[in-house]
Image (cartoon, rainbow, N blue to C red; front, side, top):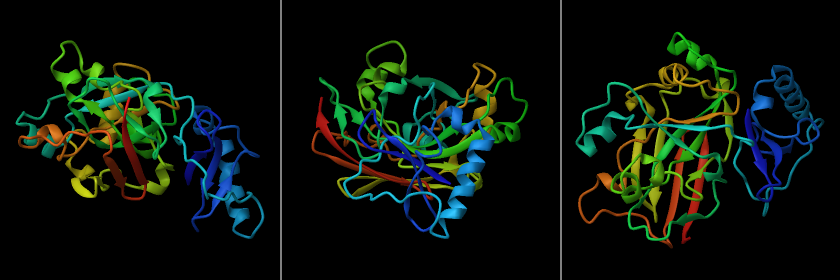
Length: 289
């Protein structure tokens, strides 16, 4: 299923994009797309049954997408765990050895915006950068998992994430990476939360990102140093993962900081577009904060 949330910021309603590309209203069945829903197998089964009924012109009401904002596909996010330097090609472009264990940092849930919302360049920024990433959404409580297979079993679905970063704040201002990762609007998410059964193998997905029409990132999750299941397993040994938590799993090569001088960092007026196979496409215009 392709689950999403539509409407004005803070007042989104739950919806679903069916196999025919028709937008369906879920608000008569569920209150939101969130961790509570993803952990409720009976509620998910009711949605699937309603989708099947809709194929015969019954069931779920149709929504007109014209002029309708698409918000983040997940509400009430608990935490966003991020994995740094998780692609072999990205490690090579940065001139560093691949990490022997996953590099973990956090983004605050309030960085999340819709897939087509404005991204703000922070005041004083000269090194705002782009990162297309596969986001993993947790559907079952995970603690001390024993295998990568168990890690995958705890995944409810996947989404496109844009891990916007300010490299000076991240790497030149001391302390942890978090200062360059938690600026306002720095985590566009969506358009859809695609359930794991529809995605299949998460290590066979292509990721792409364009800036002003120029292809900057063109990678595949097959290049991940630590695959999705292993990432979930690993993180579960350092913190409990709950339904509705998100893991951003790293970015492939092509980021601005990895390019020759003058590095093409983002500026107000730029347009960034990104996509992952089967998970949809984002488009953001950048403005000054």
